[in-house]
Length: 201
Image (cartoon, rainbow, N blue to C red; front, side, top):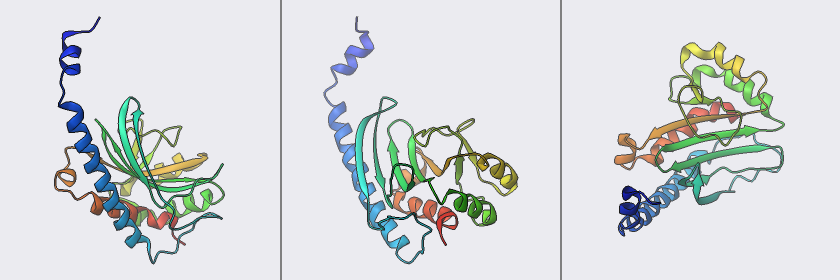
């Protein structure tokens, strides 16, 4: 049986119209982020995997990331069977925006070494080391993420030691002024710049 609350929601003919408007605004934000990241990476020499194409990107839209709608941009984008080198800008309805560098493959030990050796360039810039056992876990907070602050270099090194991949991410709550004021492209640039020491030659 339907509950009265469910019937009220099903009978609301404005929700999906509003949702459609919101999702178009999200796509517009991702388009602006793409332009912004292209400019940011133009002159950076990346420690990228074999077969990497600097211009490759992808927009994806779906409805079921743990039952919530989502959209994301992957740029730069490189996915091979056992190799990943991708910066994902993700909108997750009901949760947050995420800007994440996803790393796996032959260069992984170099990325780990860069993170620890260049830690002072990355720390205290709102970047988290994701702790999940999957690259596709997008929750944040206790048990899911560890913020990279100046005092956590040793802890970060210990977490990285045996990991077959890792992900660095900045999480932006929907309530953050960055979202309200339309500054997501700047936030994405800041997140990318914070992780560039890990992926640059």
